[in-house]
Length: 306
Image (cartoon, rainbow, N blue to C red; front, side):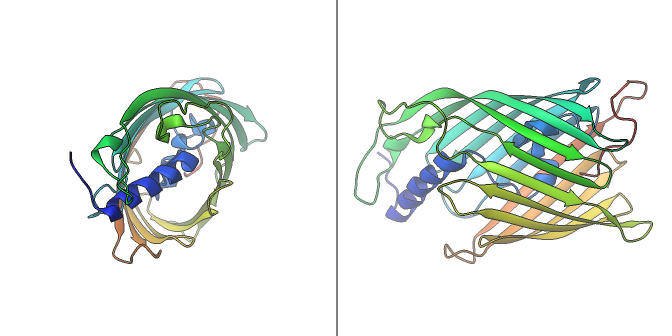
């Protein structure tokens, strides 16, 4: 049997407890990955948007979280958006894959303003290889695997200069990290994650745009998480910025946009917590926007900048 150090064992058990409450990984480039946290976002960006994101957290630490996300969404009719996503998350001895379908309906509330309401539904498939590790007290648990369903809701308002979103992507209990086979409780979660995101666009001059934004995440049994983000977009081709996650990390990002369609972005996070100042995270995203001329939409103007 493979044994692991008490420190790593403690980290694994700690992350298990955190993920039970969180249910959703944290992203630095959330502006371009909002479908995973808010189903009302689908269809807001382009006729068809395809995204691939990979995040490696705490590089160099065995068993640290690794997340890969694939998503696509688009407009299938006037006011109707549809999306699909797959999220693979690995933490220590635990691995889960979430498969979700998102749907939204957009209301025209003013000449430029749009309000979108969304629903998320899907299934999670998990495999916890707990038998391969031991706790600091030398306790050994059996490996567990299975699946469960979940649902979520969201709202999203946007125009050409501003956006604000409120969402609860997972409403039901997550039995993924139970330690006993008989512990299979279901129902409304006691630790529902609530996300609030907002941002604005300011023209500095003809080529430079300033894009401040924030993401706030609240869960009853976890500290409040707040991201402050400040990006500069130059000539619609290069974007760079700095962000700060309250009591957690300082982050930097850089992206290149090709032909206003393909975005290649990278983010670096430096941990500021008591876990150690040498812990860093890396995040890479590929984002492709496709618009099909001649296809009618409920939008008469360009989408928001996000």
